[in-house]
Image 1: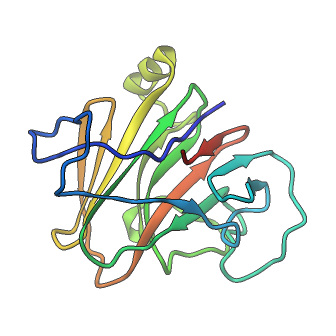
Image 2: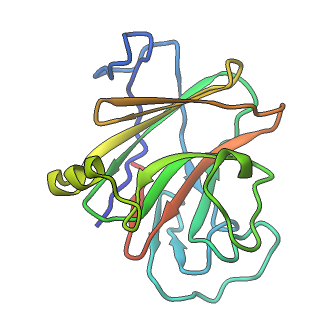
Amino acid sequence: MLLFTLCFFADLENGGKALASPPGKWKKANVRFDSNTAFESLVVSPDKKTVKNVGVPQAVPDNPERFSSSPCVLGSPGFRSGRHFFEVKYGTQREWAVGLAGKSVKRKGYLRLVPEELIWQRGLWLLRRLETDSDKLQKGSGKIVVFLDYSEGKVIFDQDGEVTTIQANFNGEEVVPFCYLGGGVSLTNL
């Protein structure tokens, strides 16, 4: 089971190294999954802390906020300023991604998980695995920390000590936590 724990402790001011306790420079995000955005095979728990891809369409209303073709879900809160972060623990499942999306991200039809579609993400992909991804699969679970520095236009990922920075242009748009869950993947916000 892929377990995503949205806890929070890191500091990029410390040379890109994660710390055991949060510094005051980054604000902890208390992320909750939004069931109104969840793809039909994703089930969000009543407390909005857990989401799982059960692989079977659920009886959910078709609303404009819901992803219609991609197993994705958005979270809250949204951000228009500041420096925020959250941590995600993952297991050995394949086909998952975590990051941020523009609030106006396309929900209907095929979705490409790229900045041009207002999605800034990192994860593990079954069909596009690199050797480094294969090594991560053999290693088992790990963690990825997502940092947002809104004013600097940066989304920073620290995946088990590998730091990647994406320069982003938010154009004043609100950005929200974003997750893609392949079959059988489960995420829990602790």
